[in-house]
Amino acid sequence: MFHCAAWLAALRQTYGYEPVVYTTASPGERLENGVVCCRVQSRLTGRRLVSLPFSDHCQPLADDAEDLPALLTALEDELCAKGWRYFEVRPLIPLELHGSGWHTAAVYLHHQIDLQPDLAQLFSNLHRDSVQRKIRRAEREGLTYLAGATESLLDSFYGLMVKTRRRHGVPPQPKKWFQSLMDCFGDALQIRIALQGTKPIAGMLTIRYKDTLVYKYGGSDVSYNRLGGMHLLYWNSIQDAKRWGLSFFDLGRTDVQQSGLVTFKKRWGAVESAISYSRYTNSAGWAHSFELARPNWKTKTAQFVFSHSPDRLLAILGNLLYRHFG
Image 1 (cartoon, one colour):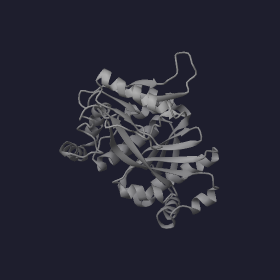
Image 2: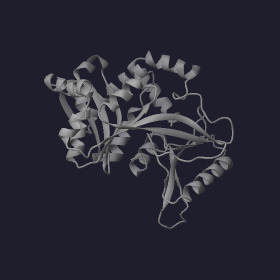
Image 3: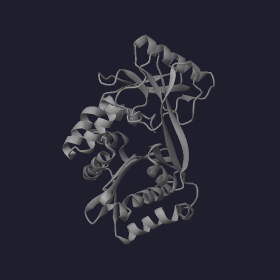
Image 4: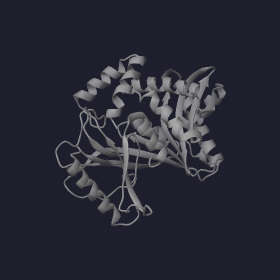
C-alpha cells in the first residue's frame, strides 16, 4: 500500500514531500524495478531521503538479484553528491546491506492475520479470555458500530487520536493528514467508530489495498476500554475483509518496547515478524535529535510537554512538527 500513488499524493498534499523513484530502466522503458523515496527538507531534522515517510514498511522493488545492489549504490552516490544527511529504507523482508555506511536506525515488530480460514475458525483462533470475551462484552453492552469516510466520523476519530497520543507522550498527526488520506484513497479508506450510546469510545482507520486490509491508525478513550470497543472494531474489520474476499489483515508495526500492544496483536492469531529500518550515511550524523525510537533528553522533555498539553495545543504542535519527523 505504501508504494501506491494515493499514499504519495497524501504525503505531498499534507507535508509537501517530493516523491522520486530510482530505477535502472531507461526513459520510455517498462519499469522492472524501483526504490520509491521522498525528499524531506527540514532545518530541524536535516535534509534526507526516506523510503517512505510515515510508512510501516516499504520494500525496495527488485526481482533481479543484480538490480537492488545497483539501485542502492546509485542512492549512496546521490547522497554524497547532494549532501543529504542520510538515506533510509524500511524493508518488510530483510535486505543484505554491506558497508560501513549502513546503520540500523530502529527495529519494530510487524503483525499480520491470515484470513484464509473461515470466520468460525478465525474466531476460534482468538484468545479466549482477552479477545473472545471482550467481543461478547461489547455486544452485551450494546455498543454500536459505524464505518465510512465522512467529516463527522473523522471528527470523532481525531478526538480519540488526540487522547491516545497524549497518553503516549506524542502529538497527533495533523487532521489535514487524515483528510488527505480520505481524499486520496477514496472508498478504499474507512474510519471505524465504536460508540456507547452517542459517545465515541474507540476508533480506527483502515485502508483496503489489493488482497489486504491495512490497519493504520487507532485511538480510544481509556476510561471505556473495559467495554471492548476496540475489540469490536477489530472483529468487524475481520468480518468486512472476509466478505470482500481479502487474504490478509495487516495490523501494522509496533514498537518492541510496547509489550502490551505486542501481546494484544498476537492474541488475535497474528503472525509476528521483525522490521529493521536501515540508514546509509557517509558521516556520523545518521540520527536526528527528535527520534522516539532513540530516546534522549530532548525526546523525554518533549514527551513530558506533550502529555500535559491541552487538546487544542497538542493538535497545533502536531501540525507544526510532523513535517520534520517523516
